[in-house]
Image 1 (cartoon, rainbow, N blue to C red):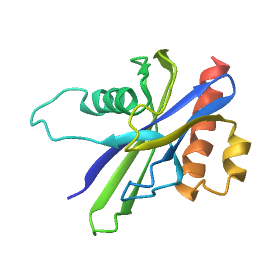
Image 2: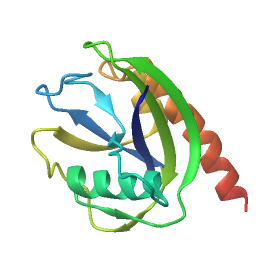
Image 3: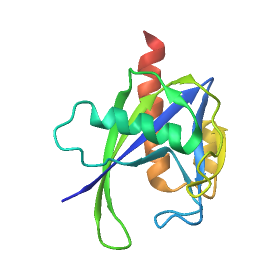
Image 4: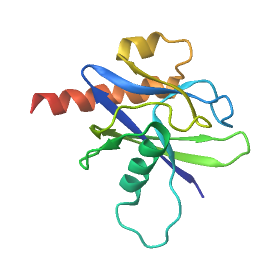
Length: 145
């Protein structure tokens, strides 16, 4: 059984919203990441992934996002305690608010970075770089319309 995690690839004016994870975090503490978190079991539910994404973005960085999120990619990994995680990344845009490190236990800092800045950053893990690569593809499709 997987732990289900969602992340938001938030794009604005040529830059991606990236956080520096708190060093208190069990997984990837101190590394750069997209904003996201674990999906909670609600039994029968509708739009659970989207609602979780909205909740996590608001709880961690204080923003609300537009309703029209778009699927980017999924990956899986294993946490240090052996639990398997299925991670889903969604492209989204800010509806309201300006991001800041609202949840200090989870977020050390908030950055707006270009893809090139992310790819060159020493604290950017491969999974973040791959998500940004896919997000760039999704963004190019949106901007063509």
